Image (cartoon, rainbow, N blue to C red; front, side, top):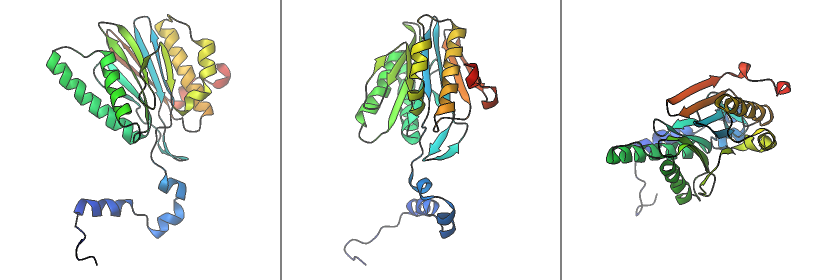
Amino acid sequence: MDVLNPKTYDAEEDQLRERTQYSQMDKLIIPMEFQQQPVSTGTTIVAVEYDGGVIIGADTRTSAGSFVVNRFTDKLTPLTDRIFCLRSGSAADTQAIAQIVTYQLDFLSAEMNEPPLVRIAANCVRRLIYQYRDDFVAGMIVAGWDKKLGGQVYSCPLGGLLVRQPVTLGGSGSTYIWGYLDNNYRPNMTKQECFDFVLKGITLAITRDGSSGGCARLAIINKEGVERIDVLGNDLPKVFDL
């Protein structure tokens, strides 16, 4: 025992250690990969501007290594009434960023007595991703509608870049559907065309990417508000129909 530096007693730390320790039986049943891998949203996120607003979509799978830990995650996180962020990367990191930015925008909205702009929300996300670029694993998309510029989509990938794009993808599943995007995207699509485009892209990514799966969550954001649409796995378009 070190007399000069005795161990301190921390009840919360002991409880956390007990919860995270695996029994001998657990070690035999649970593969080592699952015990060591962090929880990730390893995902597919898509956001597209259309004439009048934006349409965003994502799959619902959260994984830890090769194990699915949640089949129905909501990766479309509201920052304000008409601004959403789409999360990919570490689930804990992206949730923390979304909660911090939500608090900042609530404070700004109360101070300015008006809803914040989409680009301000995107810049708040970018600043946190850049500030903690060595610690966080977070690639996010910020999309929404405001009265100044209408519907907008901003990409905030790893490292803290911020760029506005009419259409953007993110997550592990995005690598499988860039060709689909290049071949099918057209500027100034209608709301229905944009909705079908996003849904088909997510379906293709779910089919090909092992880290994407579950259902498809979509949201239509415009002047009237937000319309959330969940498409169950059984109702997704068939691949051979695309």
